[in-house]
Image (cartoon, rainbow, N blue to C red; front, side, top):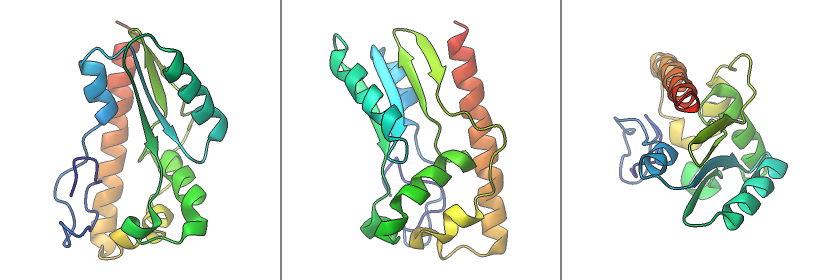
Length: 158
């Protein structure tokens, strides 16, 4: 699987499920001092449009990582694309944020994460997971989300 393929996802190159987590490409771009770095998702069009505009107006390089479900690769119904995208944010699998010249702003305003069960069920790439593995995935997402939020919070205080 690619470095952005999520943990446990089954792909053509990892049919049994990916054994490692995905790399946070936004954090990698920030580490390279890119002036504008943001994550967005197709379910939040106003946020996505605003970030595209901001990226285009940035002097120097800009990096925009957009969460856009792939029905073919993820083995999901095309009409569920927006729902999958929304659930990715609501479950903590995807965090919306932006980094502008050293300042971080978290755009995800999720008070309590939803369970990942429905998110997983809508995607064939997770169909191979049994109950125990789904519980493990839930724990992984919670831990990963906490670490991401902690990193972003730390960066916003620098």
